Length: 85
Image (cartoon, rainbow, N blue to C red):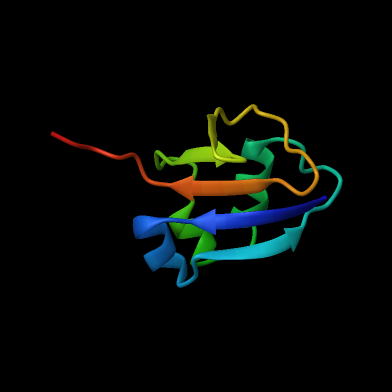
């Protein structure tokens, strides 16, 4: 499946890129699968996207859960939680 990835804030800084186009293997079906797939790339991916870190995701500009199914051609954005006051 082809996806457009976007990375924001500290994730962008840690990875050294703001986005990329990828093609995922067939077993990558959910946001969680995608994150695990990216972690398997090794560092800096494993460090920046580590499973213990809180990271928010959006699929086609809508906030989603890790269990959300991916769709062909989707934009998937990863970003740290936002705080405000």
